[in-house]
Length: 219
Length: 119
Image 1 (cartoon, helix red, strand yellow):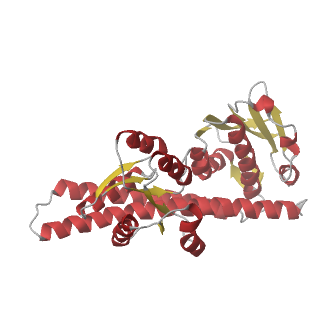
Image 2: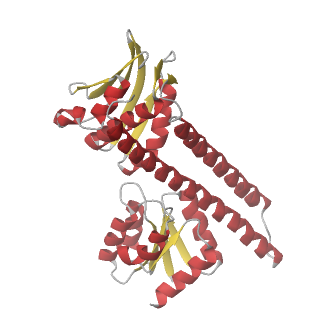
Image 3: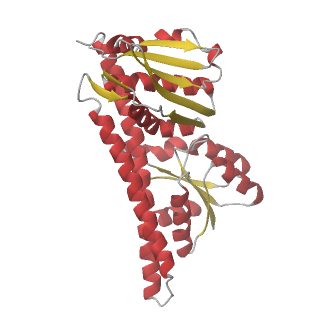
């Protein structure tokens, strides 16, 4: 049983909704670009039918632009699919770098709105734990959201590393962390999520870092 | 009529501007509020088509900045959020002439631009 399931459930639903709204916005933009490119092709064809010359390289470029948008849409939907399936299992083997990549992709639009770039630093070796991926994503999102609000425009780095008793996820380059409110660490639902994940969240204001320590296996 | 399209999706803004030009509308584009305001320093536009959600300065704030520069300017908002509530009440809430949902229908956009400029 997950402790404080009510708090986590409400927070989880809000998190899920927020991410889905952002993803749908991205998909809408992809569709809008494809729509205009296809529309322009139609316009050019209509003009050619009226006797105006048509440059084949222009058509080729437009077709290439449409294909690029389809690849972009595919990346977005693949990410959405991974995110949706993160709620499938209460505990499973998770590659933490892959989870951070997914988090960075989900955070892209929110980060851009704040002028923040989220950079994932990949470790030389895989960092894996057995955990609840959806709860971990939810907790990491709350940490990242807090970090972006604290740091302001710039770069926030995410990294995963192996530790003796499990793994550690770090959020680095959080400028202004010294002024962060102490309640940030324990504020719900972070506390409930930490409890459910058997994780420990800590701040190092001198290094502008936030660390989340995870056990090898949360069960 | 001279209009400015502002959308952080560069390909969308540039292609839409080209399609409007094909239809006889003197359409220009920018990919940020900052770029849009720079253009307003040097040129006068009759109408702006603004994306609601943009990084840093969103369409609603940009409208205020543009209106302060040119009170006669008309506005059409476009959004990726496609709920019926957005569509029906969006325009009056943000003080725009029209509020359209992506993906756009070019002929509807042209009609709305013309209607807005006749108001």
